[in-house]
Length: 238
Image 1 (cartoon, rainbow, N blue to C red):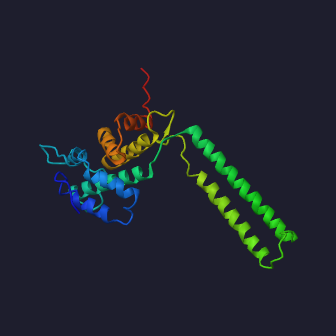
Image 2: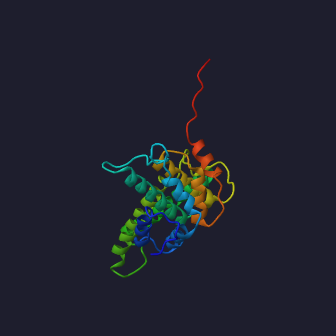
Image 3: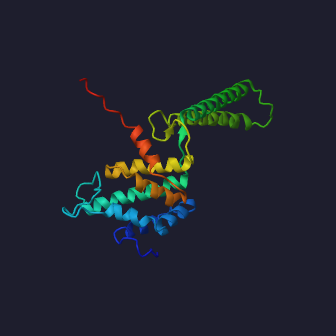
């Protein structure tokens, strides 16, 4: 594959692996190509690979290197995690949500589960009473199987509600400001940057979001989200 001249040699193997991965297709391929070609990525890589002039250590070292990794290997592993998350979040168009929107979705899904169980119960009862209204001898058995399938779907839908966002999730906002997808993707990237590098890289999160979505992004989105989710320190009594 062909790289822009400004792509660091250290990063090229990461991009090659992402390019060759079977999941890099469709919308993910389009996002990956923006990350690959957009010159705004140059300062992002510079920031990831920047070193302290005196110590020679990375200015933003990887937070949790694996056993036996050199600092360079750990840094590249962290960069890979960030780039993969960027492509994934932008491709899936992750959006922020308000808490009342989450609760409405929860209620709707629980209502679906209740209706499915009621329908399954009616089908089971019809099977027991022989009141299916069809003469095909195979139909009672099929109807019973279908009723059990409805129950499985009801359980699955109910289980999905447990995966809905809860208070404290950085993707839950009090009110919508700007594009909810830009904000959601940027927050996810900000969380990943903090996880991998242990520091606030709000400008980098904004640039990655801007490149991946081909949209405008401001450092404020991840800054406010990541600041608000941290517990405030109590002031000591004087």
